[in-house]
Length: 410
Image (cartoon, rainbow, N blue to C red; front, side, top):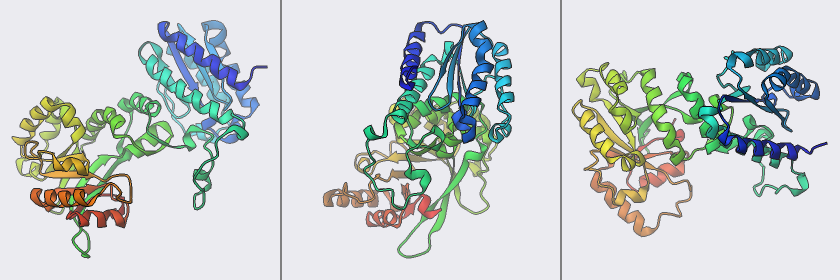
């Protein structure tokens, strides 16, 4: 009998060979591991295999049974209509699953139970997905004696976070190419309204009570990623998120968030250079009077601006003539010393708080330079974002900052 690791390696060899033979092929990842624990028993695995047998015998499909009860199947010259009966049979055989009963599946559209790929167009995504999946499975089946023990104590953690994750949906992970590919594939058809959130920028002066001055409305990438992939991403990567930013900006405009606050506070939304010069933005813009636009701040990532300077110049010309204000985000504190904010026409500059809670990065000379620079730009224009603790607020105040944003102030 083949070892589970043999099956995984055989699957990856097959996937690599598919690179030149993707025509008329589709792939499915059927995730019994997403369902209730009892649904992973051998009986249900055999039921799934039985439902897929017509594709194997009649359509030349290749089936790989994975050690976590999932399976990967790659079909050859099979249409969605050819595959639909087998998928329907799987759902019928798994009717004991309450989780599955609550889902509203569509053939060909990925959900938490079945991932779909058209390999003619999505082979690269599929290859990256299976590579990551294989690595994870090989770690899970490795004998415990050979696994590295975690260095950090689990004291104070819940069981869910302390144990080694056995299934993708239980994991807490950093955004990676595997997760990003899955999100990007599902995002165009996704309802993102439940991920629409708002966070207030607060003025904190001395020991006075925080005062709201700006409302930032955005699609929360943490919530969205969890919704689309069932993976709990707790650490994002701004470089990978750049690939998401275009789609998120379009989705945000499609939602038409209410930017007309009852109070005198301004509203802020993050867009991209490319979206600003598109017809989608023109339709968004048409909904506001000139006076209303004066109370809307459009936020750009500095990474987007530096990567697309000509697109930013065109975007600025467009929004400046219509009365919007501009905020620059993702600015590292050190970057503030050389940033020519006047040429970038920024009303606000949003500093990215360094990950380290203890400001080891902040030498005395750098601190003095930042204090002078913030005073020169204007304290009412600098926002320290990502504030999670009282220490973050105190660090900002130490530098002369009075505007703050983050979960600590929510």
